[in-house]
Structures are given as C-alpha cells and as structure tokens.
Image (cartoon, rainbow, N blue to C red):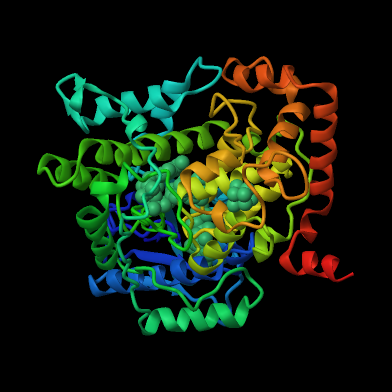
Length: 520
Ligand code: FAD
Ligand code: DLZ
Ligand code: SF4
C-alpha cells in the first residue's frame, strides 16, 4: 500500500500538510521538474533556476532524513513534461494506491489535481495549505455579502485573530496604521545597506547550465544569480533584513533610487512563496525585534501589514473569484505591451531603470512595480492579460495567486474596484517626489505638454479623459475630475493629441531611434 505524497515547487516546507503521516516504510515523496511549468509563461531564467535548485536541495534534505523521494529532473529521458504525465508514471512505477497533495497555489494546477482521481482510479486527497494565516474558507466567511473588499478591515480582523502587534483588544501604539509615517523619499545622505549574494553551489550551477541550455531565449540574466536556495540561507537573509534593514523599512518603504534596487526591503518574497520561509515565523521575528526595541513600530507594523494584510488578502480574493477573476477588463484596455518592457530600451529613465533591474535581479520592489511599470501600463491602457503575463514571468516571487490580484486588481483596475477603491494612477510628479529618476531623464517632469514633457504627465490626463465614464462618479476620483472639468476644450484636445502621438510611437522612443531622427 504505497501512498504518493506530492511536493510541488512552491511547497518546499518540511511541515507541509501533504507530508503529514508519511510512512517511511511504504510511502514515497514525488517531486517533478516539468517543461510545462517552466514554459507556461517565459519565466525569468533566475526564477526557474531558483525554483529548481531549491527543489533539488529540499529533496536532498528529505532523503537525508530517511524519506524516499522519487525526484524527476527536467532532462530525465522519460520525463513527459507535465504534472499529470509524471504522476501517471509514478502511480504505475510504484503501484501507488493513494495520492496526497497540499492544495496547489495556482487555480490551473488545483483544477488538474482535483480531476486526478477520476483519471488514475486512485483516491486523491487535497489538503489545506496551512502555511497561510487565513484559509480559503475563513476568507470566504469574511467576504460573504460584501460587494467590494477593503484590505484595511480584513487586516484588522487578522491582527485581532493572530494577536500580532496587539495590546489586549487594542493595536500596539494605539494605531492600526502607520502609512502616514512611511512615505518618505530617501535623502542623499542615507546609506543603503549592501546585500550579500549567496554564491551558487554545484547543484545551482548544474541547474543554471540546464536553464541556459534549454531555455536560452527566456528573459533575464543568470550572471547575477545570488538567491538563497536552502532554508538555512533563507533564514540568514531574514536575519540580515531584521538586523540591518528593518529599522528603516517603514520610513523608506515607498522610496526609489537610481541604481539601488533593494533599498531597505526584505527581498524574502521568493522564499516565502516557495516555502523556504513561513509567514508566521517572519511576522513573529519582526514583532520580536520591536518588542526588544531593535526596530520602531512604524517599520514593524508596515512590514506585518504587507505579510499578514496584503499577502493574505490578495490570496483570499484570488481563490474566491477564480477562474472568472482573470477575465475582467473593466476599463476596456486594449493596447499591446510595448517591447521596452522586455528590453528596457526607452528614454523614460524610470521605466528603463525598473526593467533593467528586473532583468538583472528578477526583482523590483513594490513601488517600482506599482508606480512605475504598473502605473505606465494603467495609463497607457495595456491589455490586462498581456501585462499580467509579463509580471508572472519576470519576478522570482511570481505565482498567479499573488501576481494576478496585484496586477489585475491593484494596478489595472480591471476588476472594476473589487480589490482597491480607486486606480493608482499618478503623473510624473509622484515619481519625481519619491525618487531621483527624473534628474537623469531625457524628459522634463515639470512640463505638461510638448515633445520634452514627461510621458506620465501626458498620459495621466488622457487616462482620465478616456475613462471618465467608468471613473468620474467614483468619490475617490473627485479631485482629478474637478480639475479636468475646469480645462478648456482646446487643452483637452491637445492632451488627447499628444498622448495618442506618444502611444502610437512609444516603441520608437529609444535613445537610438531619437538619434536617428536627429541625424536625418
Ligand atoms: P517587502 O517590501 O520587504 O515586503 C515584505 C513582504 O510582504 C513581501 O516579501 C511579500 O511577501 C509581502 N507583500 C508586500 N506587498 C504585497 C502585496 N501587494 N501582495 C502580496 N504580498 C505582499 N508579490 C509577490 O510575492 N509575487 C508577485 O508575483 C507579486 N507581483 C506584484 C505585482 C505588482 C504589479 C505589484 C504592485 C506587486 C506585486 N507583488 C508581488 C507584491 C510586492 O511587490 C512584492 O511582494 C514585494 O515587492 C516583494 O519584495 P520584498 O520581499 O522585498 O517585499
Ligand atoms: C514556477 C515553477 C517552475 C518554473 N518549475 C516547476 C517545476 O518544474 N516543478 C514544480 O513542481 N513546480 C515548478 N514551478 C512552480 C509551480 O508552477 C507551482 O508549484 C504551481 O504553480 C503551483 O500551483
Ligand atoms: Fe519617469 Fe517622467 Fe521622471 Fe522621466 S521625467 S523619470 S519619464 S517620471
């Protein structure tokens, strides 16, 4: 009587529910590297190498502990290339009579797993993923009867339920929210901490060579690979964050700086999402830093809000509304994704910086994702499915359950306001306030029209004009629409003309194309 216990690439946690009750005498852990997962979007090379290397290290740890692991490598001769194909082979090979799996993180994989039993004629048990604070059922109870959701109310319930940063029934420090203190730009005098790279070991190097050989055209560079691929190293990264970066995390949470991709962020999302770190342990560790006076409350609350609040909230929305959630396009956005999202080849310095850092690191921090590339995609009216596929491909932490609500809901407002009460649309002034990008840009952030004016300024008002029907009645959009109503017809016509001219030629907005025009 052999039971197959599946461990997927984002389930690398020893206490995973699928491993409960594992019987070393009879049972087998099945782990599969499969072509389907590496290519369903053109994942960044670092993302693939990170996941496969972390999987191989995790399998090795299980084996060292005495568990039998059937580990299928990507280049194994009989590898069928899909989860279902590999499970079918393993069921036959081990004469398995039962399959156990923890609920997969993505809807498409969960859908495939729930049909396995019928396909193979063996019972399949799908267990809850208890690595999250809020189960799917718990979120459904919270969401019941609400037409739209607001993170703040969900988060307060989670704080009460977990007791994190609580003093009795009251929030620590008498306040739930320190966002107001957490919007500082970065003064030039503040030194940004160095980040250590984890040197690729033999296993990682083998995986990197495999990725380079099989997927040479995927986005991104492997040269700068420095991710932790074991729990021990991921814990080291967490400790460094808490000791060195956390005290300033709150203050500079929204800041951006030229050539400084990490600032005071934790850079632990890939580890949390693949299971090397747990959400509870990182929240408790940061809370402890506050209790020991090693980090201020605005920093620790700001961090816990992201993990206990936003992370659980977006997952709840994903599972409550999939598979239909992905289909919406409330603003009817229809423009194709420009090439410079892959090349970084644009004169907009902010966009170019974020794309190039993304290519080098498979990472950008939240405000870069939301207010630079995201804001641009929103203002330019990029087709939601295209920009969603981009975000899913390019970041080491990207899995659909967390990427989709952030992009579809928070960035593109494609869900019509289910996740956020208003679109995060902003002109160049926001980017100028929160970064030093504008001072080295070919465009002038102070100009609102003309060929040298910042494209974010031109596109901002065009976005408001184009989407007036959907947005003008939103009370949180009252201010921009009041300003718009005072603009003359001529000014509106000029905005539309200039924005369209930019949008129609934006892929030619490269330094070399501009030079070619000057040379004519
Ligand atoms: P920190 O700033 O140090 O934050 C700590 C942790 O909080 C993160 O590790 C992450 O687990 C969590 N967190 C913070 N913000 C969010 C959020 N909005 N949603 C969910 N969790 C959050 N995060 C992903 O993990 N995967 C994604 O695919 C992803 N796609 C995104 C796409 C867009 C357009 C936007 C705006 C945000 C996206 N995020 C995503 C959220 C956030 O940008 C990243 O979690 C964060 O940048 C990761 O870096 P960090 O670990 O240094 O974060
Ligand atoms: C992202 C990813 C990649 C690139 N490769 C694999 C893989 O070969 N095997 C695997 O088990 N998981 C991989 N993953 C992560 C999966 O896509 C992830 O487990 C599912 O999306 C969860 O539903
Ligand atoms: Fe970005 Fe505009 Fe600033 Fe250039 S001027 S960096 S395009 S916000």
